[in-house]
Amino acid sequence: MNTELLGALELLEKEKNISKETLLDAIEQSLIQACKNHFGKADNIKVSIDPQTCDFHVYAERTVVEQVEDPALQISLEKALQISGRAQIGDILQVPVNSKEFGRIATQNAKNVILQKIREEERKVIYNEYYGKEKDVVTGIVQRNLGRNVSINLGKADAILNENEQVKTEHFRPTERIKVYILEVKDTPKGPRILVSRTHPELVKRLFESEVAEVRDGTVEIKSIAREAGSRTKIAVWSNDPDVDPVGACVGMNGARVNAIVNELRGEKIDIINWSDNPAILIENALSPAKVIAVMADPDEKTALVVVPDYQLSLAIGKEGQNARLAARLTGFKIDIKSETQAREAGDFYDYEDEDDLDEIEYEEYEDTSMDEVTPSDESTAAGQADEDVAENEDEE
Image (tube, rainbow, N blue to C red; front, top):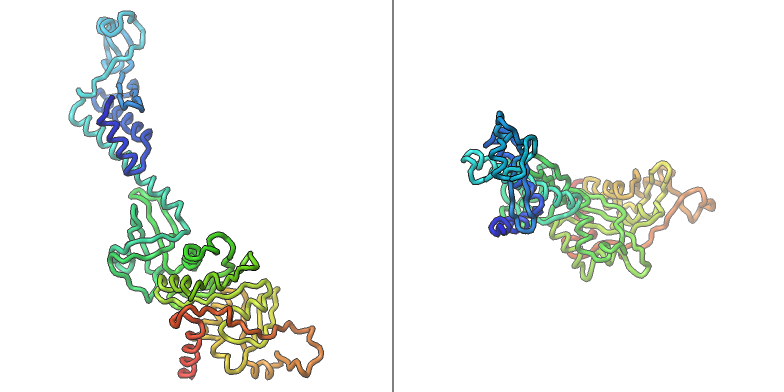
């Protein structure tokens, strides 16, 4: 038994996750390459390796002839009889090859073949491992800046966080641990090239799956996500169990669950609303924390007119239009927001106390949706942010 070779193969299999069969195949190819360098050709070389003991034998198939013209392919009858007493002219004889007789160059080439095979298999194993994690979230350690990009160590491989996948307000220090979303894994001659992101909306979804058990097991579904990385995210959730409150499950006790995600996203605000198949109700919820008087939605045209109280107009639109913009992305509707006064002057809104014909207008009365707002902490509450937005808008006006 070749105990040294067997131990080395088992160690490589354990450390680099390369199968013993693959390594034995590499050894076989290296021996054939050594024979080719030593004899000039290796078409007639056969290698036999016992996978249990790692004992190997190398044979050269040679034809028995009277007059040897090619020593690599032929053997004289006299020498053939020394190997086998039954040898005859024309027989194919397996002649043992002593690998210890190989020259230094042949041995070095054989070694290079084995090392090259190990490197190829190691790259393949790493690629397959991270390809299986594509579209998932992993934890990495910040290594260094590569120009405007950042190198992230994921354990067995390095990933690249490109500038356009970085949140502008985030700055990382070396050795800092962060969670990233794997965008793509490419197979290259130098190993897998892994591209990751901190701005992708799916990052928020995966973080909720890891933090909220109800989302992970499918009891609560995240129906839609709209995100402006580094600033605010809106998510619409739906519960498949009538006894489970989807918003409460995502917020957690005293906001513990959503706060953990907010901290991971470096203070990014998160609004969690209830999903509804009714477009009007969904749009009303999406504009939270602003109060809504009426929503007139056209599902075919994917447009909606929203009427809000005069004092809620700036809150519904949000700072630089962010609240309305995220609500539009979340619902898939083009939303036109008007104050009550503007709507009445334009004839888009009627006083229902004076009008009898209400069937022609799709109208949703405002209902208190304060329970649908996310209030995990002072720094991440939608209401707190809304008050800030109002103050800033008033200053700008």
